Amino acid sequence: MNPAQQPIGVFDSGVGGLSVLRALKAELPHERFVYLADSANAPYGERGDAYVGARTHAITRFLREKHHIKALVVACNTATAAAIHEVRHSHADLPLVGLEPAIKPALAVTRTGHVGVVGTRGTLTSAKFGKLMASLAGQAHFVVQPCDGLAHAIERSVAQPLAAPGASPGISATPPISSTTETGVLCERYVRAMGAFGKGPGQMDTLVLGCTHYIFVAHELRALVGPDVTFIETGEPVARQTRRLLETAGLLNGDGLGAGGISMALPNALGKSDPAPCSVRLLTTGPLPMLQAAAQRWLDLPPDCCEAVLVP
Image 1 (tube, rainbow, N blue to C red):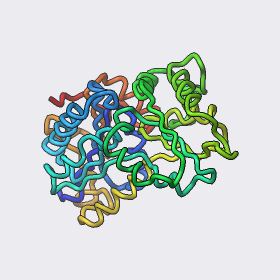
Image 2 (cartoon, rainbow, N blue to C red; image 1 turned 180 degrees about the vertical axis):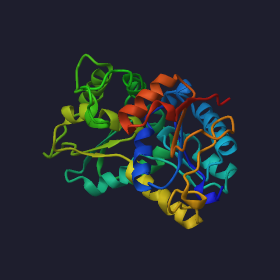
Image 3 (spheres, rainbow, N blue to C red; image 1 turned 90 degrees about the vertical axis):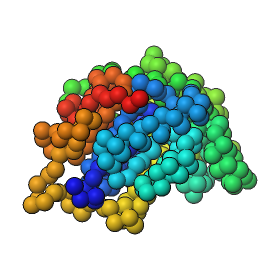
């Protein structure tokens, strides 16, 4: 296969990185993607750096050896903070894009000078995040809130039914906030702990979603912080950076077609070609039904795009 027609690898500790994949698909419609959710080992945000680093290296090797990826997007703030510098060293020939909480974009948006940041404990206590915050000292008042358990709760929530039969996929199809749901309880707990949101003096008018999962509870967060607060997430900037790296490396796929204009199937985890063309393959180390439900809910992809794999 022409190197430009090889897939882009994307991975996260679970299904949260599908928010980044959605942005990548919109920005790069002619590309192929292989997404891996390491759900059997989630959540990364509540594990140590050594463990997260080992998983990041194992997944990178798996995606290169089994799926021959031409670039890798680490769609996980925690994995980026814990291991991306090591992966860059070990895979110097691989275009690599990582994530970090979008603090700098938030500074450009805030008018009150008060910014809230929510993320996993692993991300918000990392040396990488600490260095970022230190570089911005004095530019705004930041309220940083680790949200223990929220990413895992979002993972589990995909098994819940959609709001109504036939509802369109995406954030709007998710049930409204309820204080009886696990995600609703956690969102309320952490937002209340942060303080006042709004446009008034001393209020936070900007909220940085520092975990890829959190965009999928944006409806619940919006109900808690009000309509005047701007949400900042990383999917679109990451997609634009991925495009830039592919263009620089001469790896941008112009039309997504193989020789003669025929769409080419991706190899699966066993090295065999899929029987039908598929521009996106979704892999999971955890329960297959969870990934299939998330793919349908958030990306409108059919169950046969999903596959369970083992990444030792």
